[in-house]
Length: 68
Image (cartoon, rainbow, N blue to C red; front, top):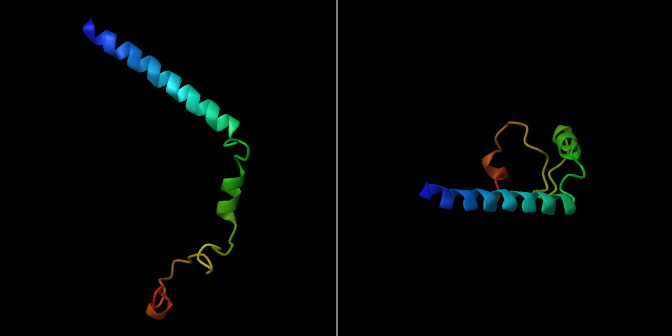
């Protein structure tokens, strides 16, 4: 029975924490564009961060590696 004195407040705190996190994500717009990421995966575009085309499964030659 003494375990309930620890488990009940812990469960209430975790549930409230999860609700607060969900409401924060809802207000910050995390759920605005649910299909955008799924469609972006299918597009074959250049990786702008690296300045090179996307990986096509072929390993780069040694002279193409960064820092060489």
